[in-house]
Image (tube, rainbow, N blue to C red):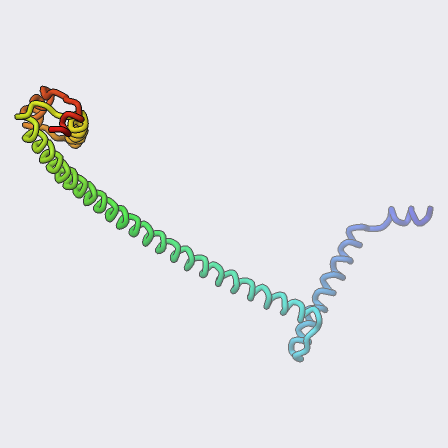
Length: 181
């Protein structure tokens, strides 16, 4: 019980001040000891560890800077590649459009040529059968197939006004009779 009574009489602020003073003193002694060791060129484990950590920290910072620079270079290269691809796409689109126009022109010319050939065939049929006034079912089918193709290709003009009416008036005969003639 006496010990407890004595504890209540202890001056705690003085004790705390004494502990703080001792800790500050120990820190000062350690700093002086470290200064002496550095001046003598000696190295402790603690100093080696601190120097190694500092070296690793510097190396990490350098590596990070190098990675950032590499990232910036890669981003710049990627942007250049994207720009080149965009230019190539524009060029390719233009080329495809030119090819499309050329193909369309070729198809139009081919259609015109075919239209002229069909027109010539229709006129030959007309000249062959207009005076005879008759034709076989086979000849009739061949003519009207050509005539349909002529119309689908956009043909018009005197084939419709002169040839078609005459050909519609022709009489269909049996194909056996036409072979005998």
